Amino acid sequence: MGNIYPTVEELVIFARKNGFDGIDWSFDLDGLPQSPAEESSWVKTLRTLGSLEVRYHCPFYRIDLGHDDQGEMKQAERIFQMIIRLVSKAGGRYLTIHIGLGHDSTEPLSWERTIANLRRLVQYGSEHQVSICLENLAWGWTSKPNLFEKLIRRSGAAVTLDIGHAWSSESVRSQYYAVEDFVTPHADRVFNAHIYHEEIPGKGHIPPSKWGQIQERLQLLYSIGCLWWVIEIKEAAGLLATKKLIDEKLALLINPHPEAAHGNVG
Image 1: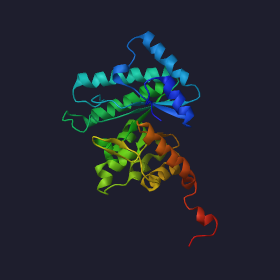
Image 2: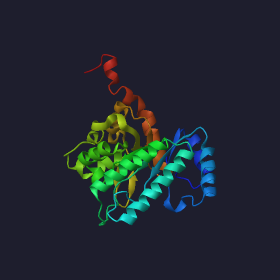
Image 3: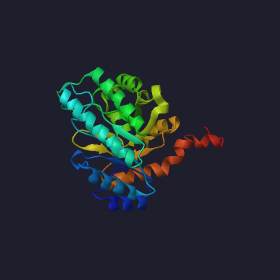
Image 4: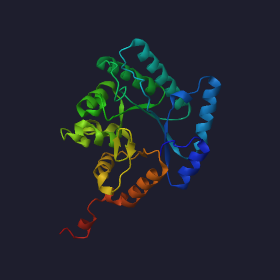
């Protein structure tokens, strides 16, 4: 689950009570530590999550490594490097980032600068034992499997597959691509997944109302060995309903045709 509560204490209580094994910690730009003392305090706080595995996420708005403005690009690089150092100090090993300024942005991005800067950030992460994972979005370059593949291959980044973004992207909606096209070229590099049904502008992440809405996408994740699944729903009722649905049907991912095992294939 994500860090959907304002305090770590509330988060730990909810996670343990409801059977979550880990936390996908999304950073808030306004809440980033501003001094060495604040950094130490943040790391100490994160360590109180105890046995819960923590991975990290930067869902930042208008912060982009490929920004055409040199100053904006350098600022993005500084922010991501600082967060990598924070994650490393907290013992984290995975950090998910975005490429793309937003649905309504008219600000220019540079393709070659994006690749070069992402490659450099991946190397910086490696020096701090942190894997940089690029998430596919519902718009922009990363919403197109062919361009997403190039970004991953040329930068050396790992992958966070957002199954709701994939489902909502024009590439899949038009049936020109399928969801699996986001992972097939680099299946061994998909380390994280964000789970919900679809993203609707103005409404956010929509939970599945029935198993069939997400079954094939979860089967895909299981088949490639990606087993870190974050139910990326902020509202507690939808989060728990989705977890209950997955828990009840998990056996079908391992054996999608149980009747065949008993000779009942008719």
